[in-house]
Image (cartoon, rainbow, N blue to C red; front, top):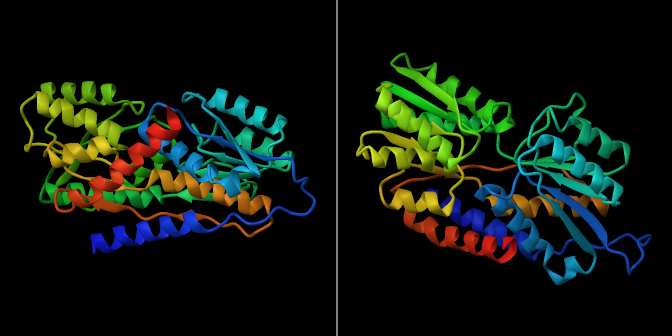
Length: 332
């Protein structure tokens, strides 16, 4: 079944890449390029890097690049800078903005400003907590509550429905952190012998996750499995467990299917991750932006997660290598 799901995703991705973006309206001057804004949370984490690479790869097609230009800005994880950059995009005359928000509250003014300027807004991977959802044309990403539930269900199964769980958050207040935490608790509360014994913020860094995990292990926190908000965090937890000589005693659950995490699964250091196809998300973001600009109907796209563990890791390695090649090609 997992192989069938992987094949379906590959077919969808290849099909999307072959469909032309469509034609410009007659009102657009043939020698003017239309600018699409694209703002990721940062350009240090592999997930946003892969997302940017997917967008740039799609935009590099001659039939797209001759008519459209991508303005990609990096706020380095700062909501205030991302807001300023969105305002700069509006001033530059972008027709649509694909927004991967740093903060679900701090970026509300950015969405409102874009709406006032008549700029289409598509949110990517994370959401904005806005009173009027009609100000956002579409959202691409996961149901993060369900993603959290899937991670925790796997964790509970690993420990035989009894034991201690540690949770490593990304940045508190981030939409994925909030919603996945809700999913974790939804599942944990169904099992009387499962307890979340520790949770801590890591601000999405591998180094912070490793330090927190080391402290938990030294304190004897009674943790049997660690559930992580992303793979970068999971790798930090796995590093700490390996350094403590406890590989195989404490399980680690990640999400994102980064190449380095997949290698750690092959080596038996990380237990499981879940694929949400970052390059495809970036591609879909600019595709929807073009559809909106050209007057075609646009709607939300919800992505399904695929479980990757020791049972199917080999079939994913080639796909992971392809994504890393995209990253090297477009982000270096």
